[in-house]
Length: 149
Image (cartoon, rainbow, N blue to C red; front, side):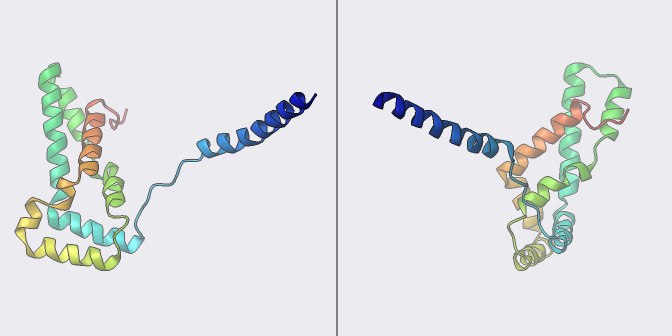
């Protein structure tokens, strides 16, 4: 009888913790994003570093590789090329700078504006996470994810 009470208690304890585990697995954390003021500064950094051109050039290179490998016709290549839109990738850049404060961003902006070395090898092109996101973005463009039908 004592063994049955222990088993019942164990079953009740396990049943109490099942909802806790289930709830913790359903809510995803929000992606970190900067404030509106910081977004303005980040946009200026992107402009000063010519990162938007870098993203477009990277996507074009990825499209050209796929077009050659898969023998696309000119229309499909053009259609895919026209689907490149930096705005679809901008949140990844914002996320990268989400933990910088306004002073750090202003300092970084001045460095980009004044030093050409920062413009060619910058924090955005050397950040592994952002580079990985850019690769995913370019591959999604190749797969036609952003082509409007």
